[in-house]
Length: 390
Image (tube, rainbow, N blue to C red):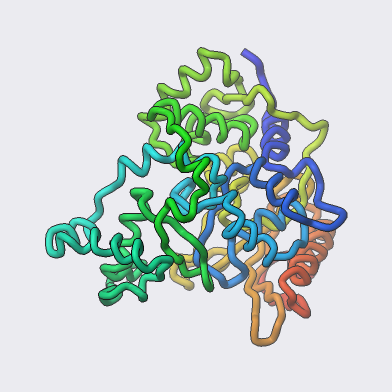
């Protein structure tokens, strides 16, 4: 069995995620967006906007400053991307729509859905009729959207639940987002026919393709890493992975310090040195699976959005800082749109780093992201061990 050092595994991972190429030096256009998607496979979206919409950041982290309006135009109007549950809510290449139909057919039951079906048996079907007749629609544009549930985390109304049921089943999809609010429409009016009509593989074949896509985007990965990328349950992923290894599609390797076998994609690139300097969204695919981040980078990272403020260790919206391929620091950031400044509410370095060098590089990256977000300045709070170096 081939043996890899953890440093080699890190270089494989960075190259697979698009950090080996360096950022764009000229005008950024759709070709750059396509290249990033080709590397990462899909981009997670999230509603939190204290800093910037999270789907913008993976592109910025890999290609540098670009026109966010141009990205939105491509994402929502080109027909090349669609929104579905990939790794959580995600933007996915439309050509991969066929790989998620098993998930659409499987569906899921949750309490609010069962409540609707029991107490309002025709409500979901009637919601589909409204979208068919009047779509694209926002939740509040339904005839009887219902009241938001103040006791639930997401506060969904009956109308929102019905739309999400239809979305999960693939009967409707996102036609656009206006101020990040989903506009729902029939799937056949959004997904181009050549992709919607393409034959869907069987369940195991779809999982195999998704796991190969995950392997391509990860470089080298454990079984858990691969399964997490597209949120495939391990009981289903394990036999599929075994067949991929037996067929020679993935190469099983032993990685220094890993407690489980690694699986190397045959086309994975091993650069001579680790590369990549960027601020990373909490939802960047490089750091999705936290056990992998600790295993490869020895970097313990958790999102503290839902942690009470008094119990937070680093802050509300904390971005890891990647410097020359190493995760060396983290910053709690917020865009103050009233004063038009980027607030750094805390800056914290990892043990053993050169704080002067890291502070200098981090300041440069913060100024770059502030300019990209049209902020006039960077304001640093006296919080964290990197303050004096920013």
